[in-house]
Length: 66
Image 1 (cartoon, helix red, strand yellow):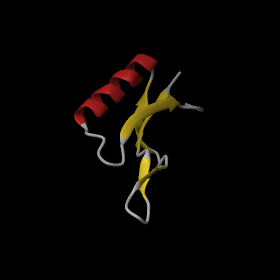
Image 2: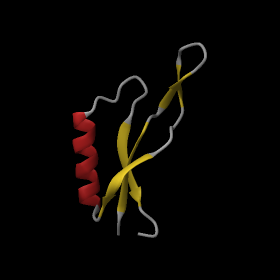
Image 3: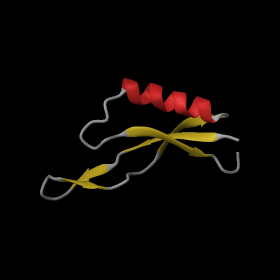
Image 4: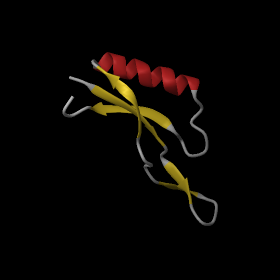
């Protein structure tokens, strides 16, 4: 089984400058073969990058068709 690694933000700024929940566009960073590799890659990326105001984080999902 293959896993797709991606980042996205979890909030957006509305017209009054306040944050509201909004899962953003997913940006693919690559693929790995095992769930252990996926967890390790996400942990490494998230440990090295501050999530910031919009809470940008790396996640993974099953890569269908790979």
